[in-house]
Image (tube, rainbow, N blue to C red; front, side, top):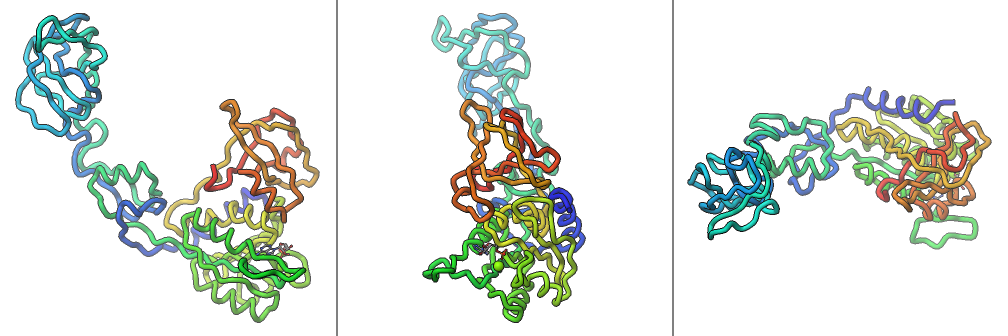
Length: 406
Ligand code: AMP
Ligand code: MG
């Protein structure tokens, strides 16, 4: 059976192979968070644009301060943003603020903390040795006019927004978010705001998948629920195939009414896998149908969530115009030993905490892949790899944080 790592590689290879370049749109910088850049960001000027003081203090000539205790006459002050005309000659200095341009003649800035008022008015005592270049960021030391600051296909986070702002880009050319159709299946499901009959349950996968789609940076298109009947299922799948990706939940196991694969096959789907060596989530299906990636995720809510994170997120990344992000695993120390029997990679609901600065993970008590309550009591999945099913207390293990929580 396919490992989840190989399954992800398959999803990435197949989705990238579609060579779909998303449409572009212009967005205000402020609204571009999480998008993928469709343009380069080029520096319009040197940064810093002038030799910039990085501390509040005094602009001096290092030659005047070779020893601690130099007495200098203060000939003026320079505020951030202000023009200045005077030059600093021998034996004098200027009071300067962080972010101001250092005056001609000065080659160092001494922090105010290393000075004290001098013997006379307008005099300052420099209590340290000044080295040339001290506390000055030279013009162009961060970037030069014409430098590429961000390449196309970069994901926009807050630092990327800041650098675009620095370069004067009030609007960005970004890729449109892909639209992910979400279709739950199951005769037992009713809408969240409906009162379930005694043997019915509320459809939680529709909304949890929509949340995961949005956390992955895409647009969720909720199609509702399809009953376990071929004709209706087919109609709703065909509707879903109009979007960029189709994600189904339920109907991919061995039950008599698990019809998803069959209906997709009838619509000409090509499948790349329909089982993975993981628990929960073993019967996950991935294929291409009418040129669109389709994920048939098992319906048990925790399985749906795990398989979406493992399989669908990389496809969404690629269809967003970027590269597939790696699975953001972190390492934590196991608080209590664990042994799993089944030769599969297990994703167990768990809590990761940092009681003394070190990550400690504890498996949550749970009753299998239908137990959303257990998952909601924690904040991550503890990963027990197929290659090492027995883990001792205190061992470092992989943890998959729940996206958006950690
Ligand atoms: P299935 O994968 O269709 O065999 O469903 C497996 C289990 O998950 C069954 O107990 C279903 O009732 C439950 N289930 C399926 N779809 C959903 C859903 N959308 N919301 C909540 N539970 C579901
Ligand atoms: Mg079902």
